[in-house]
Amino acid sequence: MLVIGLTGGIATGKSTASKAFRSQGVPVIDADAIAHDLMEPGQVSYRLVVEHFGTQVLGEDKQTIDRARLGRLIFNDAKQRQALNRCTHPYIRRRILWRVFQCYVRGYAVCVVDVPLLFEAGLDRLCGRTLVVACTDEQQITRLMERNGFSQPEANARVTAQMPMSEKLRRATRVLDNSTSVDELNAQVLAVLRDWTPSVLRTFGALLAPVGIVVSLPFVRTSDLGLKTLCACTAWIAVTLAGL
Image (cartoon, rainbow, N blue to C red; front, side, top):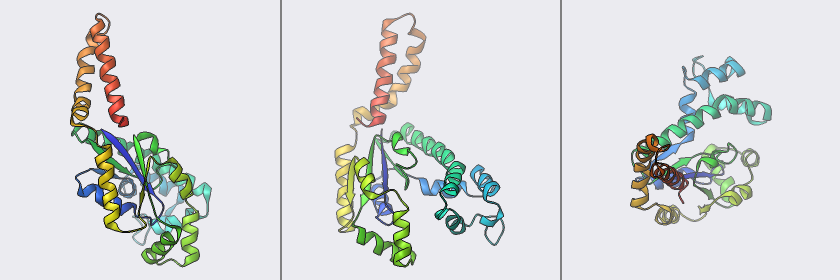
């Protein structure tokens, strides 16, 4: 199974690309949705965030975390951002890995991991290939002002607070250009799936490989065939997960 990491800059159109993948039946693992769930009362990240930042991050009901208020606290404070990352990133990573595994055992040939901070959090290391959704700087600022009601200085501040787009583009396996139209972006997504989707044989082989490992283990010490089978199945899993 090929794991594709999807990211982009703020307001470049990553969510639109995610919808395009979903429309083609590709499972999309949304890191933002996972992070939102982890901020619910009773979750470990919720407890850690409240312990660190105090009740000032809670909403009027004094129970739920006010994400906008939390965002304002960390926006201009690198140490506080790092503290928030320590409270959330390990648990987000675990849930992503679990959902990738679920996609694998269900026989999907491709799954997409949608992560705004894919490179910053090091989650690109979990992916066989990466996609960055990009548009022009002017479009990004305009879309952010229209979507969030920001002034131009506020929009500029949000953009400059992120990893430079030039660095994301340098790290990407492929770039999705979202500077024209939604139809054009959808066409690019279809091209990615056409070019990158593993064959049925490779996908089926990846599902059978773990069975081969289990069956060969008792014979590894007593049979060359058992050792060869173990090595072959392990290599097949590594290659298919990397999407090679």
